[in-house]
Length: 260
Length: 260
DNA sequence: AGCAGATGTTGCAATATGTGGCACCTGCAA
DNA sequence: TTGCAGGTGCCACATATTGCAACATCTGCT
Image (cartoon, rainbow over all chains, first blue to last red; front, top):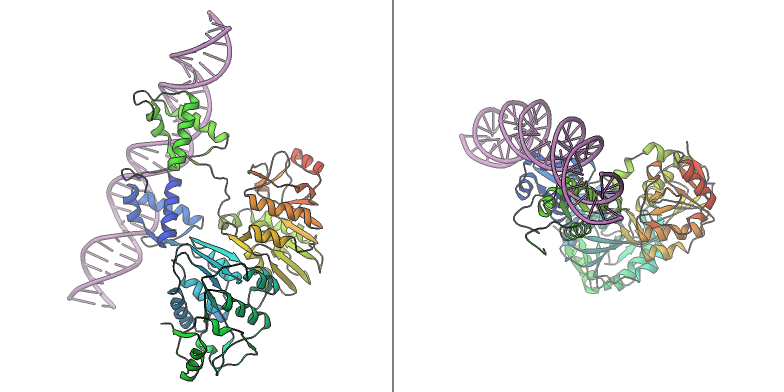
C-alpha cells in the first residue's frame, strides 16, 4: 500500500503482509504475492512454509488459507441436522452488517451462526458460550466480549447471576438466541430457569433479537416459557413449521424466516 | 531530507533517521540506509545494534523492524517445553486439596496445571482463560467460574476492566499465575499492562498465590513489572534458575519450587 | 606523538533468494 | 473414464546477500 514502486520487503514484513491479506480475504495465492513483492514463487512459498510451521496459516494448493484450529471433538449435537443449522447460519449472517454489535447465545445453532459470520468486518461479539468466544476471537477484525459467570457444563456456557448482570451492560444491535422448543401454540420455551431468563432479557434489551431454532425443535414442549419472546424481531428456522404455528407466532410479533 | 548532497551525519542524527523511517514504514533495510548515508553497511549495522540493545528496534536479517514486546503466537507457545510445563503442573497440583477454590490464570503453563488437576474432587475453578474453562467444565466434580470481559485474542482469555472487577468477588484459596519473565534481578514481569494488573491483584487477593514460570522465561526482560508479586507464596519452575536469581527472589518473599 | 572513538575493509560463514527439472495436482474436453 | 495442458509443489544446486569478527584506517583531541 505504501509504495507502489518497490514492494520488496524484509522477511518479517512479508510475513505481516501475508497474514494481513489472509485476515482480510481468508485466502491468498502464491503467484499473486510473488508478483506483488517482485520475488520468486519459491521465496513466497518458503515464507508460507515458515508461517505454516508456526501454525499461523494452512497451506493449500496454490497458496494458503486461514488456520483452522480443529476444535476438540464437537458434541454430537452439533452434527445433528448440520445442513439445517448451516442454512440458519447463512440467513442469520445476512442480517448482520459490518461494524455491528452482535450477541450470540450458547447452543449449537448459534455456533453455526458464528461460523457463518466469518468475513464480516469489525464486529463486536458478545457471548456466553465458551466455544463461540474461542472461535470468534480467532477471527480477524472481531472484538469479543465473554460474559462471565458460572459455567454450565452441559452448555459449556456462562449462566447465572453474573451473566445476567453483564447482559445489561451492552448495547446490542442484533442478538441471536437459542431456545428449547417452538411449542405447538407458537410459543418459544426453554429447559432451564436461567436460560429462559437470560433469553427473555436479551429479547427485550437488544435492538433486534432473533431466535434460531432448527426444525427438530418444532412442536415440542419444554417446561419454561421465555417471557417477552414476542419482542423478538423474528425466528430463523431451516424448514417451514406447520402453518398454524407460523400463524400464531407471527400474530404475536416475530416474523418467521426460513433459511436456505 | 535536509541536505541532498551529503547525507553523512553523526551517529545521533543517523539514529533519529533510522527510527523515523522505522516509524514511517515499519521496517528499514541496512543496504538501503548505507546508500542513503553513504556509509558502509557495518556502520549502519553498528547503529542498529546500538538501538536494538536499547530496545528501540528489532534486528532482522537485512535490517530492522519495529520493536514488538509481544508474545509469540499461542499455538507456538503451547508446544514449547511441554515436558517442563507438565512438571510444573504436577508440582502445582500437589499444592491443591480437594474442595479448594482455585484460580487459574491464562497461559500455556497454567493450562498444564489445569490438566494436572484432573482427579481432584469438588474443586471450584475460577479462570479468565477460555481454553481452561472449556477443559475444566468437562471434568466431573468441578465447578467452573469464567471471569468475563473483553477477550484478548493472543491469550484467548478475558482481560480488561470487567475481568479485573470480577476478580474481587471471589475468595480464592490458591491462585496459579503466569508471567512474562523472571528478570535477572529476581522480579516477575509481564508483557501487558492489563496482564500485570490482573496478576498483581490476584497475588494480593488470593490466600496463597504461586507464579508458574517455565525455564524459557528465566533472565528475560519484558516491559512491565508485576506489582506486589512478592506477596506470592512461591514461584514454581521446571528447572533451577541461576542461584543469584533465586537468592534475590527469595529474599523478597516467594519461595522457589522446582517441579520434577 | 599518542590516545580513543568512530568508521572502513576484508574474508568467511550463514542465510536468503533464484533457477531449472520433474512429479504432482486440477480442471476440462473428448 | 481417459488424456491433455497448464499451473503448482518440491527438491537440488547455484547465486546473491547478509552477519560477524578481526584488523586497518581515519579523525579529533590533548
